[in-house]
Length: 128
Image (cartoon, rainbow, N blue to C red; front, top):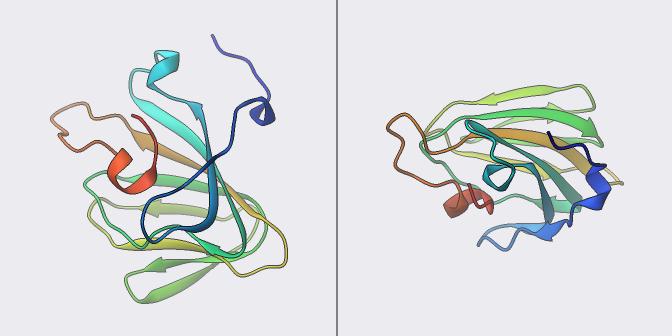
């Protein structure tokens, strides 16, 4: 079992091409012997964003703090605390901060199990 405060985990910059002013904490992942999913916390500074990308795995996202939008192809959806987002596999998406403070959200992704061959590090900056 792992019990830790999220702020004790280093927030690393997302240095994937196309990202701006975005940091990520890998809260739970393969290093914790989690067999199926990774839980990451993203923090995007005002006017920042994740890269615009698509990949073979899904995302489940829960907005904790701030205001922003998620791009679904060319369509924008507003985000606020409590918003829930499901990004299906192979769908182009991008998270953008449109508020005056940080946009923070949890993002859960599957590990490359059950026939998945792609590792999420390509687009999302995690190790699992």
